[in-house]
Length: 165
Image (cartoon, rainbow, N blue to C red; front, side, top):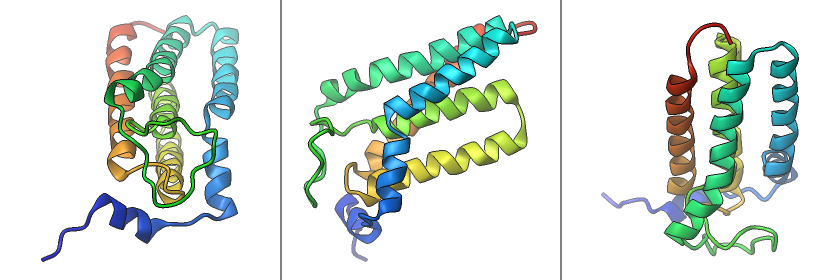
């Protein structure tokens, strides 16, 4: 039985469509930061101090640390198709995957509602798909981004949980 490589997966998923590029653009750091500012503003206006602290710590640290992890691991991006000049040199872990997972994971834990979980899961999966379809990341880059971000969000939640937010 022949093994399937990460490049085989990228070739199979390849889609340089407007949809994939739009999803990638919408799950970049600037649009996610805009959503994060809105969430934080709502939490602060509702005086949910503990949730605001949790959200800021969990999401902010993932967003700040992910570029450092890329430098630490130094994994080159796939070279199957030309990459836009604005993408960073390294690919592991995927920033789009980690940043989206951190934001969605924090929102799910704050909201505690099944519809938020389901919608969030779809958003995280679509963000990962776009990075793979565009050939900007290997599957393990995306998986690592999701795993490290969601693990960190869960740890921060355990540290900051307590009485009413």
